Image (tube, rainbow, N blue to C red; front, side, top):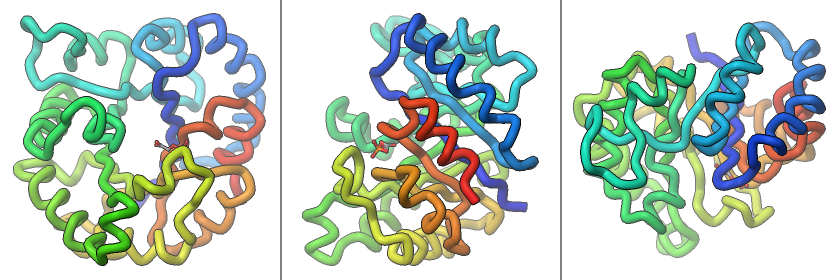
Length: 241
Ligand code: PGA
């Protein structure tokens, strides 16, 4: 069964005090959230503990934004699976385009991180997607197909979420047409061995476009950046029609 998964990717935003403020505005809205919808928040690491305590027993699941493949070691700036699970984390974003672009993440390291997440019982959210240049050159399909092929080597598709995130739509306000996102997500699904993997769309998801996005048959949720930072807009997205 494909699940609906709505995840907020807070990137490098919000202190602990700002997180508490967000929760005060956001949590009451979850009373209206339909059953069976997974709501995930992926804050900076420093907020995981405070969120884990506050959210205990609520509808929100905790996600992280990165995971290293070793259990521990001399890897300055990285974080490991046991550190995340100890903080109540259940999901982890892997291969986000910002990590691929700015922090030299490759398909090989994405693959290692995906397998590590699963080894520690976490559900990875694998991000794939093309740049504007690649789209204009007609390379969208081949690029995504190569990413999937390399990233998913020996990855268990029974415990996986994928996010299709066209890079040109991230943080730009320039959303991919819902029908086009649906088409690409259909192609992604056709390349998987498990047809029940939930596949999200990500890239300028907002209260104004969430209903159209979620009305598409192939789209199982959203990975939301900017619009997840504000309680009312994230609540509208989580509680979409
Ligand atoms: P955005 O970011 O919603 O701000 O475009 C999405 C993402 O980077 O996951």
